[in-house]
Amino acid sequence: MKHERPTIQALLVEDNPAHIFLVQNLVSDIIEFDLKLKAVETLQDAISLLEGYQPDIILFDLGLPDTTTTTGLERLQTLNIDIPVIVLTSNIEPNLPALTFEIGAQDYLTKDNLTTEGLSRAIRYAVERFAYQKALIKAERLQVQIENQRLLHKLMAGINHEFRTPISVIQLAIDTIRNYATPEIIETRYERITTSLNQLIEIGKYISLVTQLGLMEIDTNSALFSDQIEEILYIYCVHHDRVQLNIADNIITYMEESHFQDMLSALIDNALLYSDDSVQVTIEQNQKQTTIAVQDSGIGIEKNDLDKIFLPFYKVSQSRTRLGKEGSGMGLSKAQAIVTAYGGKIAVTSDVGIGSEFMITLPLYH
Image (cartoon, rainbow, N blue to C red; front, side, top):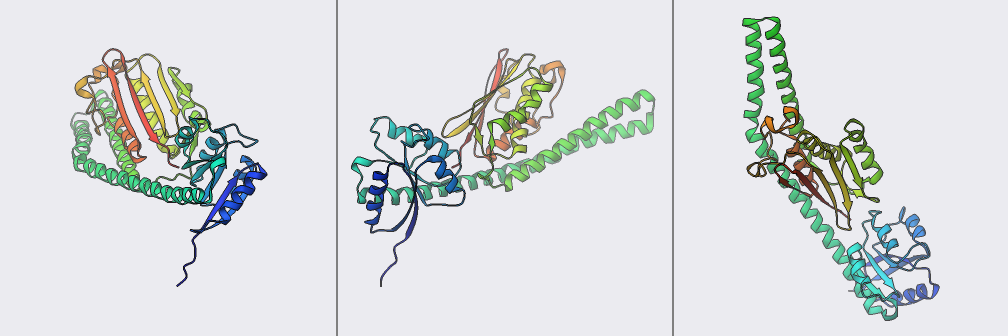
C-alpha cells in the first residue's frame, strides 16, 4: 500500500536569487515529505504575508535588505507568530549560532554546506521539536491552573474566620448603637461598620480574582506593550510623585490588562505604605522572560515576616506602616496569585531600615 507523503508548508525569506534557486532545488529532492515553498525577499514582505498565511516552518536569511544580522529574527519573534524558524546564512561568525538560538531559532544552517539531507533533517526536527515545546508549555499552564485551584481551596478553607471578624464587628457596632446611641457613639460605630464592610468587599474581590485565575487559559494572542504599560502606570506618577518608572523599550507581556494593573498596583501601594522615599519600578526583558522590580527605601521587612507576607489576610504591625496606616492584608497575596497564574515567580529581598525589593519574572510564550 502506497503512503502519501506528509505536506509541510514553508516560507523562505531570502533576497539572493541564487540562494532562492539553491533552496528550491534542494527541497525538490526531499523524499520524506512534500515541501511547499513560498519565497519573499524582505522581512516586511514576510510580515505582510504572515497576516493571512500560516506556514509550518520559516527559513530565514540574516542578511536581508531591511534588517541587520539578528534584528530581523528579533522582530519576527515579537510578532507571536507561533511558527518554528530555521536560520539560513552565509555568516560564519562563531558566536552567531548561540545568539540566534537565544533569540528563538530552532536551527542554524550555513548556505555553503547546505544539502538536501541536512535541510530535510533540520526541517523535520524543527517542526517536531517546536510541537513538543508547545505541548510542554501547555502542560506547564495546566499545572499552573491546578496550582491555582489548590490555592483557591486553601483560601476557602480559611475564609470563614475572615468573614466572621468583620461581621462580628458590624454586629457589635449595631448593638452598641441600638442600646447606647449618642452622636459620638454613632459616628465611631459608623466608621467601624464602614471599615468592616470594606474588608468584606475586599475579601469578595479576592475570592473572585483567584476563582477567575484558577479557570483562566493564557491567551498569547493578546499582549501589552511598552507604551500600554506606561499608560497603565502613569496614574501613579500623577497621584504619587514618589513613583519613578524605568521601562525598557520593546517590552511585550502576555497578560490581561486588568491583571497587570492589579499585580503592579498591589506592589506599588505596598511600597508607598512602608516608605517615605521614592519607589522605583523597573521593567526589563530578554528573549526568555520579563523582569519587573518594585524597590523602596522604606523600613524593610522583619525576617520572621518574609515567609508570611504573601499569605491571604496577613498584616504586619500597623505601627510599622507609613503614618500608621494599615493595608488590607490581601494585596501581596493577590499579586502572587496573578504572577503564579501566568507561570511566573515572585520573590522579595529586604533589609530592615534600608528597604525592600519585590522581583517578578514572567515567561515569554512563543
